[in-house]
Length: 256
Image 1 (tube, rainbow, N blue to C red):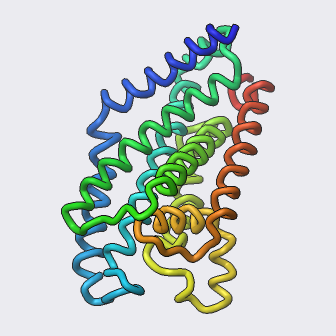
Image 2 (tube, one colour):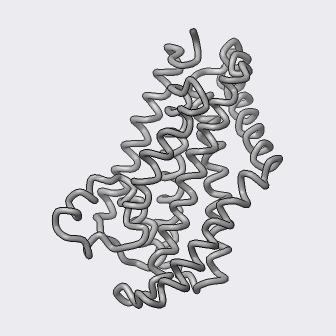
């Protein structure tokens, strides 16, 4: 049985990879252009007025957060759009009547989201080199943070797609929850520069921990505890994976 599920897993991931490459103008180019504009406007033009944060120029400080922002949004969007499209076009039924287990289906779409998140993250990182000299002080922290974060938000996209009943439902969470949390997650500033009340509020934002972990990997500074942050992302990912599998088993959102 595990061989059949392994074959199904490879097939789902391969299909997601082909989908990402086939429509690369929609999946890969827009985030690179958007982040290049962020690097130019906030890093170069506005950053010169702001000066340094600690021992780093403003663009050195914000680049890790902007890379992480692109990973988060693309991992999430890939899974929510792909799985909801399968529901909408009714081809998810082919998976449901096959011997493919719910674990395999969730893993397959999650890996697809991770692939797109990492691919976009690498392209944005290469683009940033035109604007600043990146440091890689802790490559292992960078690696684990980007993998865990892309897994978490791919699972979040799957969860959103299960509940979505129409295309409007696919955009509600990214627009009203994900985007505000990302912009308020310390991408453009250090949380230590905020008043005490807003510092406390910021620590409730899960994206703050991912951005700071990633920033620590590049330039070695962080506003949060590293062990707690990695554990937090790992626990959230495991819980969301188990929840998605449970919802798949009972057919929530995919069986009328």
